[in-house]
Structure formats: structure tokens, C-alpha cells
Amino acid sequence: MSSPELSVVSLRPTSAPTAPTTDEARIEPPEWLSEYAKEAWERLAPFYQLSATDVDEFAAYCETLAEFRESSEVISEAGLLIIDPASGMPVPNPIQMVRNNADRKIAFWANRFRR
Image 1 (cartoon, rainbow, N blue to C red):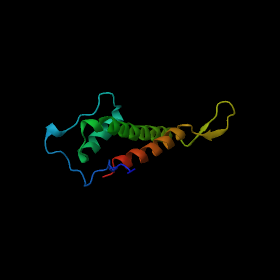
Image 2 (cartoon, rainbow, N blue to C red):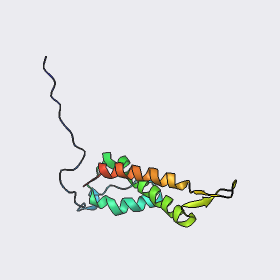
Image 3 (tube, helix red, strand yellow):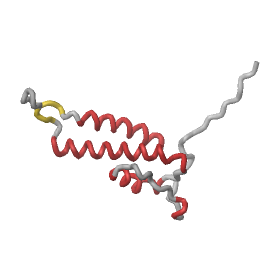
Image 4 (cartoon, rainbow, N blue to C red):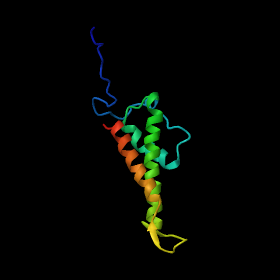
């Protein structure tokens, strides 16, 4: 009994992608993206050769970057510690958990789209 041949498929590009040369090659961001995610898309998409099959994953990456940015802004305004209304004592700002989760997701998506 012989084993079947398996091929390895890499999701990473084999060379550094270049910006599209024509507007026809440009993939538009989904309409449902948040404003921060649309900004991330506009800033990063020209560096990748995105296809129609990449849209949802790249959108998730951009939304994760937006989530990190927004949670960082909240922490910047409110601080790392907030006052617990029940005890009156300082406690860690719970939005830090959102930012920490976004940080982990960024690492995942950045690895997926590493150039």
C-alpha cells in the first residue's frame, strides 16, 4: 500500500507584493467596515496583491487593527486604572482586555499577510 502524495500549499506570497498599477486591479473594501478599518484598508491594501478571495480575511485584519486603535484611544482618555463605582477603589480598565485580545489577533492576521 503506497501513501498518497501530498503537496504543500503556502498562503504566503513568494515575493514581496507590489502596488497595483491600474485602478482595475484595485479591490474595494467591503461597505460594512468601520471607519478606522477603512482607513487601515486604504493604507495597507496597496502593498498587497489582494484577490476577491482575500477580501474577508483582509477585512478581518483591518477590523482588528481598528479594534486595537479604538481601545487604545479609550485607554488613553480614561487611563489604565478606573475607579470602581461600587468600592471607590482603582481597578484595571476593563478595555485593556479588548486591546490585549486585539493584539493577539493582529499577530495572527499579520502573520497571514506577512510580505
